[in-house]
Length: 358
Ligand SMILES: NC(=O)c1ccc[n+]([C@@H]2O[C@H](COP(=O)([O-])OP(=O)(O)OC[C@H]3O[C@@H](n4cnc5c(N)ncnc54)[C@H](OP(=O)(O)O)[C@@H]3O)[C@@H](O)[C@H]2O)c1
Image 1 (spheres, rainbow, N blue to C red):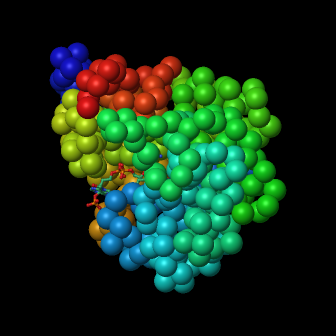
Image 2: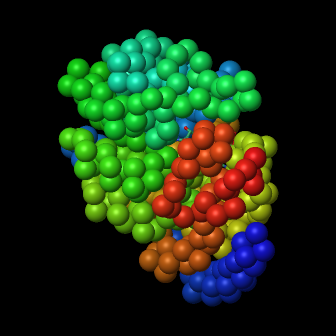
């Protein structure tokens, strides 16, 4: 943790010096155009650069999804385990935006990973979402929990009971779903590089998407480059880092989540002033300029509007400067609770082993 703090302090000092110079060099106000942009998946389909997350605030989600769509967003990210699929479905209908204009993704939860349960689980999601298909179905995590209705099956000591099949079995069942038309593409979330290599080696379909934690504090440069080389598009979850209070209250990351919020970093604040944007918008634009989609969550209109207007070009020098904020701080790591060493070959797992963060 001391190393993290030192890195934060020194990157803040470097960033201030850098950004002051940059501002002096850019005295003229710049007109920054918003470029609504999308990326192409390995299926040929296109996925918007900016999307909308739906984790938390279930009572607000119907209205929020509807407002997000009306504000121009066209990528909605949800999951079975968020318990908001009904609200998301109603929000889509209420927005008046035609279904075919929306990229809708959901995630299969770990108690439904047995190959015989996969299609039924998707059917339940489709029913709640009130749609005949999703554009993307993801495996939420690589770990499999015991089959049954209980989403978090635990033994008498509270320890998670794992299932008997592997993510390879689940993936093969998901591959069959593409042929039914119930999902247009399949992807994964929270996988390690080794787990993805196993899928690529043992299965037929290369995941279209890897949804994973990426923000300036956890840039995962080498892994992102590898994913790109494999044709796997990255969707950044928690794109604002430790902005979500959830990370300050969960045991998953309490040792690191209280550090300075990403968006309070002086460099990002200064860049915001340079571009006439907020630090949030700089952070989202950084992800998009790196070729990734971002799915910030918000229920508040002015924030949604800001997020919609986050696709603009950042100078190469500014992109390089943001790299100095990479302190490899991972906030989403339920490894101990899920009884599965997640992200085992990736950055940012130091300090989250053996219950240290639980
Ligand atoms: N695959 C996975 O395992 C996984 C894990 C985590 C998240 N996700 C997905 O990623 C989405 C986003 O992740 P997240 O919610 O953890 O983090 P986030 O989107 O980075 O941060 C959300 C927080 O930022 C605030 N916010 C949003 N836009 C803002 C703006 N323009 N200005 C100021 N504050 C702003 C929100 O405020 P308000 O709440 O007040 O609006 C909320 O507190 C989730 O909703 C979910 O769909 C997936």
